[in-house]
Image 1 (spheres, helix red, strand yellow):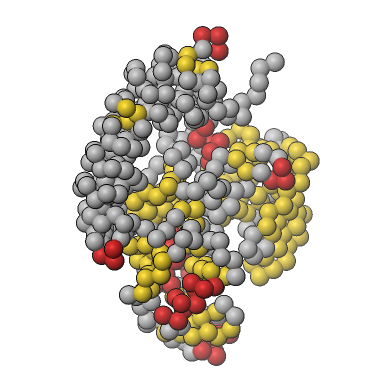
Image 2 (image 1 turned 180 degrees about the horizontal axis):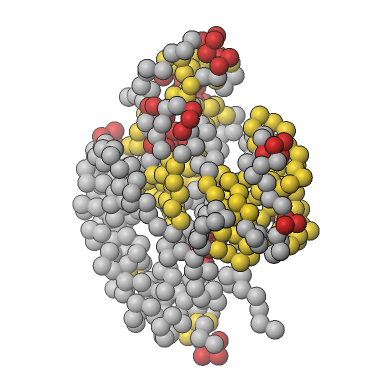
Length: 460
């Protein structure tokens, strides 16, 4: 959880930063809540009072968000938002859309959604997600945010961690060794995996995974989950609750092009007082949940506490790095288990170069040792320097970095026949939403043509 401030004057709200959801909503002063984790509405704490904000406005649109456990509904408002507490000097957005919840189930903590895509759709009303809007308005220099969650094995520190908007977290994360994976075309941070490994047992799967800071456990489809639980020799004490001795070291890994082992301590959670009386003090709950849904593997807190998560909203990818003080070489397995990227130095798609992995320093065919999407001198998709740019300059390329152009024939900030900053790139440019294949003199400096529209009001 972290602090945000909404309104004029600003009101501080503690919110859950949730990469598994899209919307920002806060509990309102007259909210009603029921469920296992409701406190704010009953106690009158951590609530937003729109009547006390000079800049709050009710759009009259309703919203309803449903989660695996619980839901929230109310109305969509607009107001100012500050990153940080009310008394901080955090960057501020003048107008954001967010929900004020009046009816809540399960948990009444505010939720700050952090999706991979740039819009969310509450009941058909399109709004920008908060971080995408903040980056688009220039509040942050980099299109990334980094989440580090402290490792701990007692209930007193389960909510500790740090989120860094607009940059890497060099204090807590080994950012010189980030493993990037492209996310799928969904709102969440969903990415393909090669399988799950439990001990020496490798379970291959085509089911994608999502990195979700708002989920407590590792959630697996039933068929996969039962094999994992059986392999760990966990004891079932009731539906979806499994136990292990607290001094055990359960082995569970996620297989990408290298193996990422979840910290065994994060897979063991202290039992409730009632369960301890029945099971004993030296018995812990296994932080794995079986689900009847077979469409997603949810990597919750045990995963997000084991590795730093770097989210790139521009290139739609997520990066994982070890934490400072951990062993940075513990997951480099090279040829082991017949992995697809079988080069001990991170491997490559065809194994032809030292770092040739399309998401981790390398290139698709390994023709340039550091050819990642950020352009020359760090290469491109096939190692021709720019990101799909044939001999292009650092920030240009076929699919365009924000300042790039169709093939980047001119300077680093040019499009195909356009002047600096005018050619916005063939597909997408947050700084020049009207885009364009060629320069359009009558467009007030905007490149015309094929660039996508980026929610800018039309001129009257």
